[in-house]
Length: 331
Image (cartoon, rainbow, N blue to C red):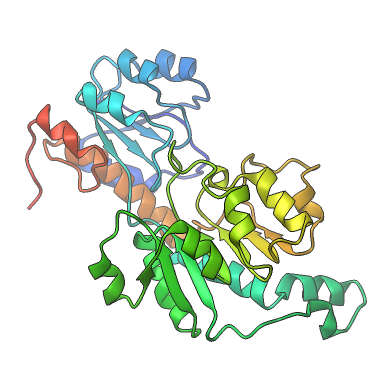
């Protein structure tokens, strides 16, 4: 019997071999649940020592019901499903995996950008429908010398910047939390969001979803963009006001969009975006590769193993919790 009770609150995975490999070293076997609501989590997890979560809502109400939980580890970079303040107040560490799928999401961003700029999907659909004519894609502009604006300049967009610069794109970014030194080292100019919208030929979204970023790209921002501009989103759907996006596309205020994420997922079959041939949509899959998934699972499990072994996790979201919990630092 395991010394600690570690519950996977919910999952879409078919194997847990990477997690078991990590946790078996300290004698832990996982317990699996499929919690969809706060009530589910409260009923199934109140006596857990640790939680591993994918999408389950870990609200303040849930956290206050946990009797002895020491760590909540989330599969992924984002942690908007977890009430961080409540966890900190309760002395519970929250872990994520900040260097997960950096290559995958940055590659997917570039793929959407290139497909949009070169009208790949539109031309492909035309050919398969019987039209062999490059004029279907006009206008198409040369990438070199045009400007990519990155909304957010963390790990993933920094990789996007390097890859975009290889195509001759000038890169600018909006991120009030990134220093001029880092941007300068990467040959990226930091600008305001307004300047970014006005200057960019391609706008790519890379900020986490929270109360400050939800709907941050809306009517005002689209009204400032170039008519030739494309917007790319591989972050979170609600960061873009979808009604404003649809309006901008219908009124031809921008040229098109490449979206891996939407406000509502899966997409509503009646969503107007599905009928627009200047919009590319993929099913929230930018994060995926076989290698990335295995790495994510190992590192998520390691967050739990570290805490239950008396160490702070490498990927600690709520560093303020150290004022309440005294563990060892990994050397």
